[in-house]
Every structure is written in structure tokens, then in C-alpha cells.
Image (cartoon, rainbow, N blue to C red):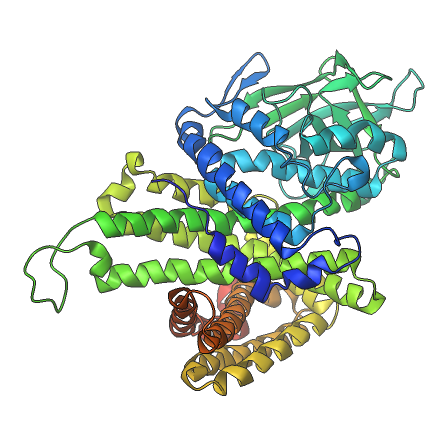
Length: 597
């Protein structure tokens, strides 16, 4: 089944919900306008559909191979990357002073959705490069920036992030990789240690790879306060910018994975011969805070991945449901078998998939717009407000989008029936590929603890209450809109349930953090459903007005209202159940002895 970029849906969210025109009006974005964004989307759609999607299956079937540290990618990947690089897609968001296009985050996010849906494995390479360039741009010295950023932004030298180690997992306080001053006295360091789960850590698509590596200096304090960040290139760079000697860094093995087979996940070894040269980024012992610049962008990017792979699964499920003939349609006088899209439960599953995807897209792009405002808004108070919104929404977008991607892609398999369990249809690949998204860049549990701790409790619920107030305003509009009142009623019930859980968590977090933690993932899901429903309610109001004004494609706008109604009836009621779990479920989760589990 071929992928078709949902350009009309993306355009609607950009212009009507995320506020593209406002983002284009921010300082530094003056050269961007909706017409230009339309053109970018059309070209990106062509590339996603015509170049990336056709090799997605190759990546899954063939994967990557490693021979003596040399990784060979799946058929077609190298050529596709060169086309991707030469077309300038890598540098869309890169700073202009280093050769980038300086596009708003909102615009690049929309394009990233297309890459992720067309070929998730491929998309991880430029996504990580974007995060690495952000980290260097914000924290590296001018010298390091001048050496590495132009090549990374052009796509010639992709970037990676090397955080975890076999004994550390997500607990980076356990990082043991070492960095010692180079005896040459040139200001560089010698890095030693092993890193695991390094996405695109080694490959044959580029002449050089720029690794960002966490390691400890000899006099570093214990724990996360003693971690520094280093640039460790695959090949050293000569004074004239040309590539020099091979650095002492290599891939020792590839992980055998459930999904994303086209993306090489490497075990990387540094300094086996005592000569892995690295360069300190910024100040010593501040590496983890620097890496969070990269990690926050990566987490938002993974939220895009979850939503995008869900879209791909949905498209395939719809196409299959239209073609697959089985059993007569209920309530029909026609005795012949019908396409399964006519069966009520299949319709329910398809709408469950679609409504969540549309809610996720709207909430994700809203976060992208806030990211742009936080970076470029001229008013300091608005800038601070936008940053608080970004901080609050990122764990929700990452956690909710990816958790639901597991459910949505599973429904995609279910709609295929037995054929979904057969690899040849491709439905299973989306299911397998989606599974990692709720694990890497911080599991859902980590996102949820971040949400209730650093984001909710630390600011006494300020941003949550601002959002709940905005939801209430949309509720009032929906309830006054006649035929949309049923959406308003469901959204109001969900909002009221969420107010109670916010109050409970604020009252509980300091006095009984374990009890609050039991409800953290349910709270993250609750906020995702509520805020996603809020965005669909906004979409329904806009669609209703477009229909009244006789604008555009009537069927398109009617579908937006139908999707909002379905979400209100099938998804929003879950918020009340989650509220019960959060407020009254802690004791039962913690009371049983560990030896009895």
C-alpha cells in the first residue's frame, strides 16, 4: 500500500489551529509565509511518497549489516539520503549563519511528520542531526560551531547522541565513560567507554559522523552533576576543514530489534586503542543540561513519530477495509458479501484511529508553534508563557502520542484480521515500528514523572490551570453552537474531572510522592485526551463556520465535525475513569508485597 501525505489535514491544522500566520510574523520569520509553506509541503509530500515510502519495506526486510565495524545500510537508503541531503531538507531548521534555512519549528515539524510516516527508520537520521545541531548551536564554542555546524546542517555530516551505557539505562547518573586531557596539550580530550542503543551510530550514508558523547572528567563530582558533553567525530577534521585520520571510535555490534530494522542501532566503543579524540562542549560538568537541549527536541520529535506511524497504519487499514470483502452488511437486503468497511465494528476501529491521530496532530503542532514563540516572541512575558507551555506539553505529546501509537497500529493489524498477522501485508511492520516510540528518549513513565514533578508541582499548577481555562472557553463556545453542544458537554465533563486530578496531585506530590507517581501515567494520558479533545472541539467550531460561509470543500469540513463528535463520545469519557484511577488507585498498587508480585 502506497503512502499519501495528508497535506490537506496538515494545512488545516497549521493555518486554523496552530496559528501559522502568527508564527510567520515573529521576528526572524519574515521570509516565511503560508504560501511558501504550502509549496514546501507539496515538495515534501512528493519526496516522502516517491523516494522514502518505496524503500520503507527494504529497510524492514534487509535491515543493516556490520562487518569489522563497517555498517552497510538497506538497499536504497544511501541513495535516498544523498537525494535528501542535496535537496536541502536537513538544514530546514538550521541557523542561517551556518548555512541553514532558519525555518520555524512549526513548519519543520509538519515536514518531519511526512518523513516519519513514509519511512520511520530513515527519518531518525536527520531527526538526530537536528537535535545535535541545536545542542551545538546553543552551547558549543564558536570554533566548534564553525567546524561542525555547516557540515551538519548541509547533511554532509549527520549527528548522533551517545547517552546511555550497559549499566546505566535511563539513569544517567551511572554513566562511567571517561574523558582525560589529551597529553598533546591541544585542548582536546581522550574519551574511553562504551555506549549502547546509539541510533544511526555508524552507517555508509555520509563521509563523517559527529557524535555527541556524555563522559566524566577525572575530577568530576559524582552523579549527574559530573557529566560533561564532548564532540567526538568519526574522522578528525584538519585545519583546512578537510577530513583527517580515522578517530578511535567504532561500532562493535548492531542490536537485533523488534522493529525499525532500517535504522542501525549500534553499540559504540570509544578509545579501544587509547586514542578517541573529543572536544569539550561548553563548560565542564554541564553536559546533561546541554544534552537536554537536544533531548527536548528529540522527545518532541518522537511524539511526531508516534503520530506519523499511526497515520501510516490508518491509511493502510482504510485501504484494506475498502477492498476486503467478507460477510453481508448488517441491516442490508443485499445477501452478497460486502467490503468490511461497511461493518460497524470496523467503522468504530477506523474512527478510533483517525480521531486520535487528528487530535494528536493538532496538539503536537500547537506545541511547535509555542516552541517558535518561546524562541522569538518580542515580548518577554509572552516568551516566558510560551516556554512554560512547551515545557508542559512536551511530555504529553511524547507520552500520549506514542502510547496511543501502540494501540492505533494494533487496531491496524486487527482490521486486517489474519492477514494483519502475516508480514507480507505490511500492517505488522507499523505495529512493530511503533513499539519503540514509547520507550526511547525517556519511557512514558519518565515523561509522566517529569510532567507531575518538574512541570505541574514545581510551578503549582500554573500552566495546567491556564490550559484548563482555555478549554473552558472552548466548552462555552461549543455549548452555544447548537449542534456542537454534545461535544461541549463531553469536553466539560472531562475538564471538570481533570481539575480534580490536578488539585489532588498538587496536594499529594510533596507529602506522598509514591502515591502521586502511581497516577502519573494515567494523568499524562488524561491530559492528552482532554487537550486533544479541546483541539478537535476548536476544529469543529472552525469547520462549522467554514460551512456556514460556504468556504472550501464541504465534505472536508463536515468530516472534521464528525471526527470531533466521535472523539467526544468514545475518547473523552475515558478522562473520568482515569481521574478515578489517579485519585483512588494508589493504595491498591502499592499495598502488595514485592515478594508476592
